Length: 259
Image 1 (cartoon, helix red, strand yellow):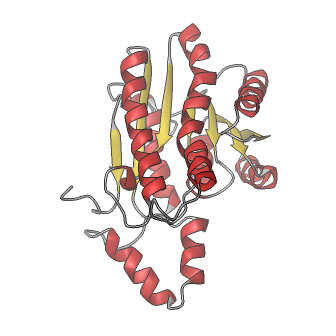
Image 2: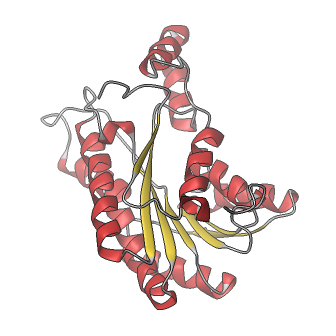
């Protein structure tokens, strides 16, 4: 077992979507556990905020502006991370977006945008990093999936489909790249990210919307904090999960308890 206080000591990590929410919480936690973190986000200002917080706590990080759904941007991101950090030990594919809508309501452009950002991004970033892992004969990939990749949700057909794809991509890559590269995903339940908080703020009855969200996570009856999901990602990224691969780790407060 690794030192529980320094689970990623001397590791180099690339996290996408690390400017806010689960990505930012994970970047802060990974740095606290000794990792040098490449903080990638499509919003460079938010990436810089994450880096500033890491550096203020004594950690090492750099900000990279990147669109994880475009191959040219992904290649440049990985090249920059490798040039700055010298190597990569962990890739955390965290980018994802969603939009409400049933199949007949969504525009083709909406469908493509959600698939590109949520599923294609995992493929592209893995495609760019895996050759480096293969050369070093070691590495760990963590992907952010969702309970909505396990359970269908009304009017979230594109997001559910994309997140289910992330789970299956995780399992397929785990088979392809074992035994030296581990590939896992975390499946959060409803989490207190800026997107969720925005949904609450826009609701006509904020208390009712908050209660509705709490009720989804049926056993614990609250929503998760990003730092709680980051703890699960840290476990999967660390050597403490040395015999874990192809797993979809559910962290959902009981949402899928009878799935």
